[in-house]
Image (tube, rainbow, N blue to C red; front, side):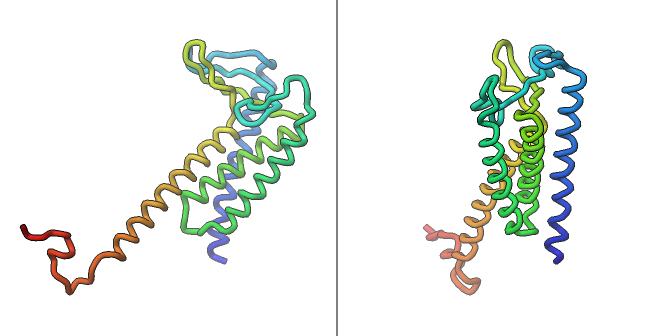
Amino acid sequence: MIDALRKLQYAYLSLAVVVLDQWTKWLVEVHLPRTASQPVIDGFLNLTHVQNTGVAFGLFARHGANGGSWLLVILGVAALVAVMIYFRYAPARNRTLLCALALIVGGAVGNLIDRLASGGVTDFIDVYVGAHHWPAFNVADSAITVGILLMLLDSFSAHYRSDEQAGESAEPSRGGDPAEATGSTGA
């Protein structure tokens, strides 16, 4: 029961991502005509209103056609269910993993809301250097990306912890020769 209560706080993080994502998309849709661009930091960042019918960062977009949007909704829901199951079984003490999963859930829900409502996702963050533009993205995409990076970090740190614990269990007992414990031969 206590673990469930500890995990509940991460639902608030997911909710915050959804609210921030939907609010920023609404602001862009109301104040910036589609395909219009507003410079924020010259040479690096624009707000550009784009409707993305593909997956994250515009991959597999179907320009002018929404035929694949239901497939993307189904795949999105399946991924969301998988992440939520993973969240349920994740240890309550693993805050990094739970935070990562909460960010992913919030981002997935934010983009699913758009996809269900309009067949596509509103993207607006346009990062570029010179003529080289990163595909436009949004708050939900950012949350998913940060969540995945946190999962990788947690995975690497878990691997490091397991290697460290394996090394501790391989150490000799305290009653042995100190030279043997350090691997020193005394020569």
